[in-house]
Amino acid sequence: MARMNPDDAQRPSRDALVEAAAALFREKGYERTTVRDLADAVGMQSGSLFYHFSSKGEILYEVMRRGIDDLSAAVTLELQTCSDPREELITMTRTHLRTLLSNTQASLASLLYEWRSLPSDQRDQVVQLRDKYEDVCRDVMQRAMDQGVVKQGDPKLLVRLWLGAINWSSQWFRGDGELGIDSLAEEVVDMILVKN
Amino acid sequence: MARMNPDDAQRPSRDALVEAAAALFREKGYERTTVRDLADAVGMQSGSLFYHFSSKGEILYEVMRRGIDDLSAAVTLELQTCSDPREELITMTRTHLRTLLSNTQASLASLLYEWRSLPSDQRDQVVQLRDKYEDVCRDVMQRAMDQGVVKQGDPKLLVRLWLGAINWSSQWFRGDGELGIDSLAEEVVDMILVKN
DNA sequence: GTCTATATCAGGATAGAC
DNA sequence: GTCTATCCTGATATAGAC
Image (cartoon, rainbow over all chains, first blue to last red; front, top):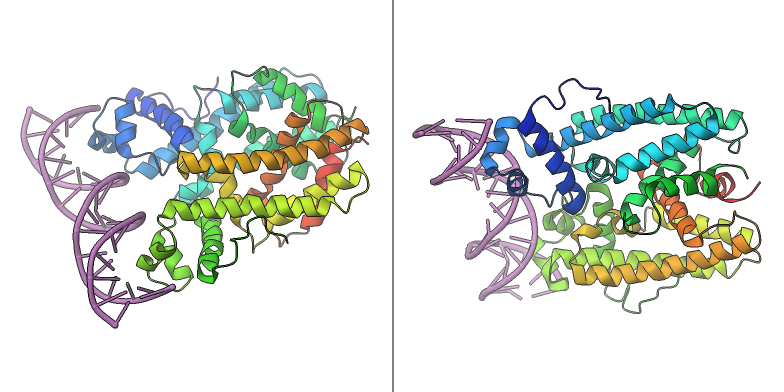
């Protein structure tokens, strides 16, 4: 999966820390995860974290930034393989869900629920990245509307409703059920988006 | 609006505290709201809170319990005025959105995002109430499917997608835009639920 | 039922050795 | 780059007066 930021994955222990942090934040929430928890997860002492990051908040920022970067990159890449709006819709949904629900990329969950813990200047940066992602989605939705694949309406609003529906799956989806991620993606597109 | 628990609103300062807490939790998040913040909001000293509640966590529990109670009561009541599945769908959506986005009943937001902070025994109780509410929604969805108002499929899954779509509005909806709550409800039903 | 004062403790962060 | 040791703040909760 293409990375949009060349710095990513260049510093191994920093990198491992961000991954572990993403998992812990998803599990326990940012505020309830202590720097000692983070250090334990990568076999360090808590003081050592601050060689890599200047604060706990900066770790959250890095988790979020990578989360939205990876998501954008993955969706953009996959969209290139599509030949019609219906296929774009299902591919976008599937890729978003895979990234969100993947156990190795837990970063997105923080992005959804922990933004109040980010210092406001870093929040602005993350919001900007998120908006860019939503623009990509809106374009797909617009094309789908133009072709009559989904109902006419405000594409921006539809993107929000669609995002809500699929992001909420992080609260209830468990990989061990009958329903797989890819089938879920199809259900979403069939049940709430596509006309007939 | 009918209350399901007779204890509610019987003890004024406890009651005011729960309301203030709901607003603060929505604004800053539970973990970042201190007992001093809560005390300030009702003009008390922080120590005095513990006459009414044994812990901060119990305040969260009370906020959530009232949130889901009030929502259930409101939706159940409004549904009685409906004569067909299409109307039930729009009424249920409108009532849910009104309750979620109302400034005087901020409790629901905590219910959505702060459940990890609840002690597990209380979490079970809240989950039980939430499941009961979802059962009501599922019945409405089932009737709508039977009548061909929404596409055939798994009503339980459709309720989850619908809940995700509308709950997510707490993240982006601002009362000052062109779009009002009731119009949003109609858009939701039109864009993602109803056939044609 | 609320206040003042304070106990207690956990969490983020720093300093300096290695 | 990591460890040990520790500082310091701020948060929950308690005790006892009024």
